[in-house]
Length: 218
Image (cartoon, rainbow, N blue to C red; front, top):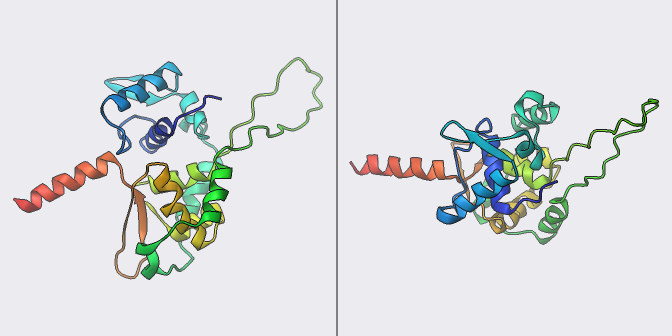
C-alpha cells in the first residue's frame, strides 16, 4: 500500500468528488508544491494523463479506500443514504464557537490508519495455489468526514454524527482540531431554521467567491 502525504491524500479525495478527474486543488497547495505532488502521484501510478489534465487510476482510488466508479460497492451508496438523513437537531447557537475536544481528536488520530489485516475468510476450495485477493482497505473516519464535507451540498453536524457514530461534541472537536491541523479550511452557512451546513473550502469555491465579489463591485 502506497504511503500518501497529507497533500496527496487531499488531492485524491478532491478528485473522487469530480468523477476521478483532477479539477480542484487544496487551497494550501500551490506553485512548486502542487507540481511536486502531481509528479509524485504520477510516479506512483496513482494518477495518469487524461486529455489535457489528469485523472485517478484504480490504484489512486484504492489508495484512499475508495473503489473505482465501475466497481463501486454499497459503501458509497450507504454514504449517500446517510448524508440524505438529517434527523438530529443541533444547537446552532454554538456553531461559531466550536472548540477542539482532546478525546475526540485522539480517537480520530487512532483511526487514521485503518486495520489492513482484515481476514478475507476461509475457503474450502482445493485450489490452494490460487492466492486470495488482497482485502480492501477500510475507509478511515477522516476520509469519511472529508468526503462528506467536500460534496457540493456539504454536510450538517447531524449527518456527520450519523456517518461516524460520534457524539455532537466529538464532531465539533474534530472540526476545530483535527481538520484544521490537517490543513483544511472549514466554512459554513445557515438558511432559516435549517441546520447549519459545513463544507471544506476548495480553490474552486475561492475563485467563485472572487468572481461574485467582483460582480457586486460593478
